Length: 280
Image 1 (cartoon, rainbow, N blue to C red):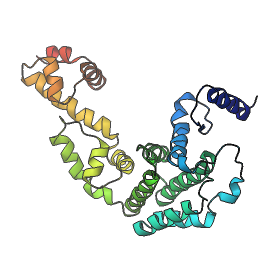
Image 2: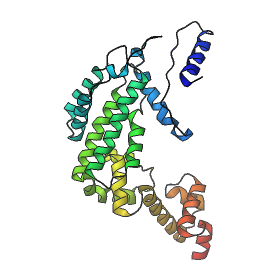
Image 3: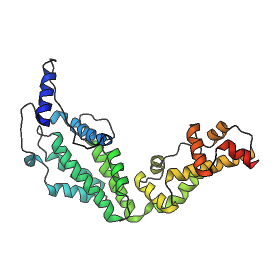
Image 4: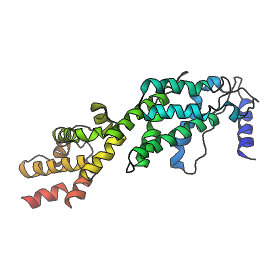
């Protein structure tokens, strides 16, 4: 059997065992287990439109229902110029063109895939050095990150609004002016659980873009930079105090002793205990 026949047989078998109506939503095809999240997201998007999924034995031509390219491109242009009002207007126009009661996962995936591909392209046009893989990861993590209710296309709309801000930052390099403040934050608050997402929210920056320009400015990733500061502080405590190793780890922001020791070894070539013994 092909996929369609196999899934229909599976669905019919299950339907014979229950008294309530069922439908099946199938995610997009992926090649590797680690890509399952991509398939899952297309299912979540389809599930958010479950009230509009066609009934049993309803067949239709997707090309008749797909929003026309001109409308979709108008939405992308609104994102490109960061016109929030227009983004919301054009977004609604795109999905209004899809006839109620005739929307399925395949159709949604076609529209969303085109949108996401073009978003990455827009970023590359603004900055040829932009890390496309990081942008794709940001989009993937944020496009459908929320639980879906009956009118749950808000997740994708919110992503497009945020992405408009991101493109504006790429154009003006606004983030570079605040890297000094972020560096001070790291040096003063290294004990805290600092993340790019938290700093992005604090400084109204896109986290993916902030990570890219941080690495470009300092020659290492945000996480590596933070680890280096923490280990430098740990070295000071090992030399100048009698704190136990686990106390030092906790004092510089590490809750996991094994992780602390591994990071210490990678930067200093020996364990904290051996380092203290040699230093004394």
